[in-house]
Structure formats: structure tokens, C-alpha cells
Image (cartoon, rainbow, N blue to C red; front, side):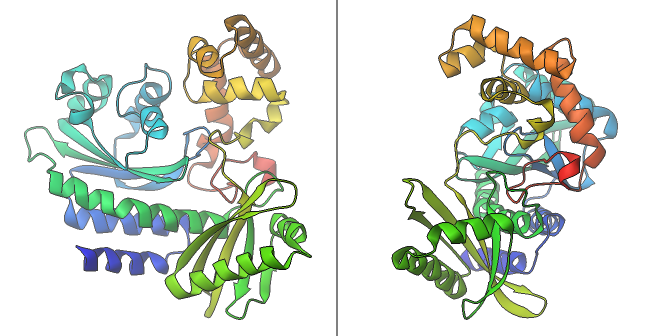
Length: 358
């Protein structure tokens, strides 16, 4: 098992684009855990909306909107995207989530059963508080069940796959000066090969502090030795810099790709909301709305008066020119996600950007 995982990590090490990482992960898992229907989905970690994926044998197109409605508008069904994002698990078996009662699952009744499918296994690609993707594995009704050993095989792939996905997003994402991390590429001797604007801004923050620069160089050296490394560096304004480095071959040269950004928040901003010109409080309500949360849930979660949440939601709808929250989510999906499915623009941490930013 350990040697197989090492082979998988080596396979990922030379995959530098998101599609290649997802394709390699699907291929490796499929060889060890067979499925009748399978796909991978790339997610915006802020909104949990699809931004692409790798699909060779997925669900028919006519089911896609039904899946969207269940994941984002239906009640919080156990094992759904919102449930997975709120937890820490790397795998989810639908039958176990439903306590063995698949018939109680709207997802099973609406999506799986009509296609002659039974249980579903999901592999969650998460890193820290964010969820960047999910692999969906389905088997035919009456076929062999997923075994604990197969679920363990899937779980072992989660961390290296999520790490490779983070690296690919950093290398190919757009740095727009938001709260997403900057991209720094160094040579093996520590010389800077390239730096995005946000990375340069963070280097300016570290300038003049030998100890902070030693910590950064130590993380880069550790990545050269072990393939990947992380650190958190306190900065002078009382905040902290999150550093994530990978050893990568780019253009035939051994280099280190370094992510420089603020320590991740548990509530990442939905960058795609910028065109709606919302206040910070309105954006907070809109973020929860995109996550499929009802106004009552939002009020309880934020410890706000229901009337205040209702007022902010009304402002969101007024500014977007829409009548209800379902229409708002659909507007975001149809304007900013579906037309660009499987391609940019994404930030360096995988969040969908307004088209103009690409």
C-alpha cells in the first residue's frame, strides 16, 4: 500500500495542470476501485459551484441541473457538498450517510435510481478549511458494494491529490491582487525566477527582517528535499503569512513554486460577487446564499437578527435585479460558471473570478 501511494505521488509530481491532476487521480483510483459511472468535479472553494473537472463516464447531461438543485437548493442532505465542506472527512459513502436507508435520499431517488445505480462513493479533495474538488464513484444497483478496503484506498489518495491540485491552481491561476495567494518561482539556489504582484507585495512585507527571510528560505529548502513543505511566518502587522512550497520541474529546470498568502479563513470570499457591488455585510449574506443556506440558517449561523438578514438579502436581490435567492444563485451560475466550465479565469486558489479578470 505504501509503495502504491509513493507511485501515485510520483505520477502527480509531473502533472502541472488541473485537468492532468484530476485525470491522473481518476485513472489511479479506477484501476483499484472499479465504478460503472464516475467523474471528478473541480469546485470553487468559496461557493462550492463547479468550475470544471474530468469526465469520461459521468452522468447524462439531462441530470446535471437536477444535481445542482439537490446540492444547492434542497435541504442539507447528509453527505451532500455542503455537509462535506462543513466536515473533515475525505470519503463519503451515501448508504452510510443515510444510515443504510438509500430510499430516504433525494439524491438517490432522483439521480441514481433512475439510471440503475445503487451506492455512491465520494472522495473529497480538501486542504485545511477549503474543499477544492470531489471524485464521484457509482456502481450499478445490485452490483458489488464498496468495501471498507476500497474506501481506505480512496482515502489514501485524498491528501496527495489535493496537494497536487493546489500546486496546479497556483501555477495556472490568475493573480489579481485579491486575498488569494501570490506565486513565486525560485531556482534551486534561491534566486527568483518570477513573482506575481501579490508575491512581490509579500516579499516587501518580509524585507528587512532576516529571521522571516530565513523562515521563507528554510521552507523552500525543505520543499527541495521532500517535495513539498509549509510554514506560517508571523509578520510585523500582527498577521501571518502562509507559505506552501513545491519542488517542480518547469521548462526543463528544477525549481520551487511557492504560494504566499494570508492564513486561510474559514469563510473564503466569493470573488465572483465583485460585479454585484455589495457591501461587506451584503456579501456575507450572498456567500451563505450561494452555499444554499436559508435566511433562517444564515441568521442563526451569524448570530444576526432575522430582520437584518432579510434586509441584506433584499439589498442583494435589488442590486442584482432578481426576485428571489434561487434566481440569484442561478444568475451567478449561468453568468459566471456555466459559460466558462472547465476553463479560466480562476484565482491562484481556485476561486472563480469575474470574466474581465481573466
